[in-house]
Length: 170
Image (cartoon, rainbow, N blue to C red):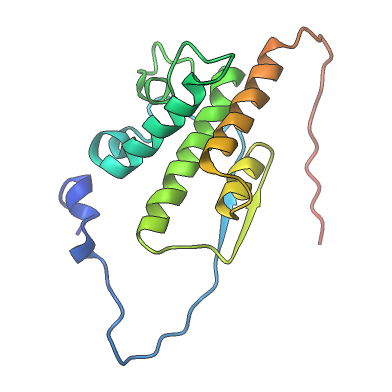
């Protein structure tokens, strides 16, 4: 595996499935979600182009945003596919919903494969994806929260300088 195209590599026959009658220990794991700042131009491009269910999720999220009273004039898919030279993915109005959309699409893809976390954690806007993964928000509600979070910050006229602190707590 790993030599073919993305759809070939992700084909179900390439995964190891449990054997009937053999007992396996379930290992718990968590999903950790990042906030804005982890985005880059064309992130997820191969998944969008080659994995229909991933692309379908983004289309559904785009449709939800287009039904809002303050609908964007851009789409999540285009924001993700724009080349580096013209990408506006780092604008707060786009980075917030784009990061959340990618995370929602990953969660849905992993669920399709039967992968569910035992716990979730998120930092900053990653808390939105974590709430979705935990079943506390629908995909539509999560993308709307992320969109308006970026929308409000993008519309702000405040000139207040701010900062963030990271504290290691045992």
